[in-house]
Every structure is written in C-alpha cells, then in structure tokens.
Amino acid sequence: MIKAERLSRKYGEKQVLDGLELEVRPGETLAVTGESGCGKTTLLRILSGLDGDYEGEVYLKGRKARGLEPNERGTALVLQQPALWNHMTVEENILFSVKRRERRAARSRMEYICQRLEIGELLRRYPGEISGGQAKRVSLARALAAQKEILLLDEPLSNLDGGTKEKVLAFLEEEYAGHVTMVYVSHDEEEVERLACKVMKLSDARKDGR
Image 1: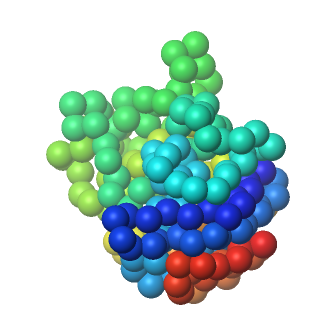
Image 2: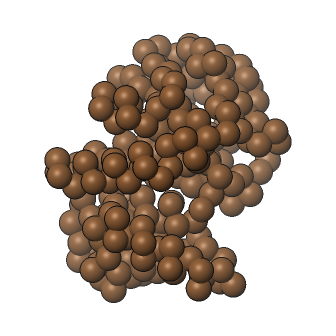
Image 3: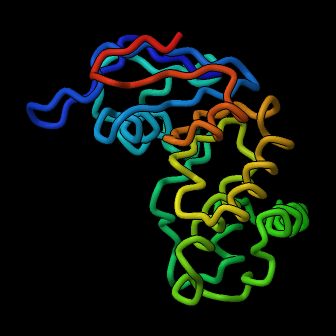
C-alpha cells in the first residue's frame, strides 16, 4: 500500500531523511517514533503530497506518487496542529473533503464517528468556540469521515486528557487497526503497542523501515 525507496529530504544544509526505505502492506499500521526533528512529520507530509521537494521514490497502492496532487493519493492526514477552517462550523470542517454527492451517506458516518469521539454536541460551533483537545478530535474526525484507504496520523492523541485519550484510542484500535492502512507518529508507548504491527524508529537521518 505504501512503499518508499531511497527517500531523502534536506532543508538547506540539514539532512532530515537520508535514503529511507519502508513498506506498509494493506491493513498494517506502521508506528513511527523518534526524537523531535528526526523527520517524522516530514515523512507524513511527503506521503500526503504536501511536500514534493524530495529525492527517491514513493509509491502508493502501486502507483508512483510523484506528481500526484494530495486529493489524488487516497490519503487523509492529521497534523499535530488541527488546521481547521475558522469560518466553517465543526460539521462543515469534517465534511469538507467529502464530495457533495456523497454527503448524505457521509453525514451518517460523521455522526457515528463524532459520537465515539465525544464531539457530537460541537457540530454547530466554530473552531474558535472549542478547546484545543476538541479541535484535535475534530481534525481526526475529518480524516476518518473521508474514508480514505491510507491514514497518516501525526500525534493524533496528544493534549487529550487521560479518559478521553483512552476512549479515542479504543475506537481506533477496534475499528481501524488491522483494517485501514496507517502510518502513525507517536511518542506514546501504549499507543504504539495497541495499534501498530511494526515500528520504525527515526533516531538519525538514515533508517530502514522494512
């Protein structure tokens, strides 16, 4: 489902990724761990199509990804910062990437996801009217509601209180781990242990994640 060959990325003189190799099969969850600045977020941005300034090759579902727009990749990305549209309600944010003709079916799916994430009462509010933890869950709901084949999640449970985090983690474990292909960035050992079938640690610029 995801393959990277000799993947490298530099920012000026700083080498962030250097010849990285990885392979994620359908339904697998690859957890990516490592210290800040080692390239975890950069990897997700490359896979999602937000960063095209790299060397090497990326393949998604057997297709070379270079040149594909983000909406052509079959991926949904959750960044550490929620990046919600402030002029849209929570509901509009969640359904933003869903095609208009699919909205009716997506709305039912959205309501279920929001109920599991405990944000159902927020649908008519705007991002400026909700907390940071709620915004984090709205961002996750947006990715899940889009029903993409590949989920790219960058610390999706950070800043959630213990009880809420456990409920969201249980939801991901029950309904997504083993069913949807995920690349999951996290520093949390419990999240990694419960969701991932393999782990890649980026401790320097060159790692092999096969």
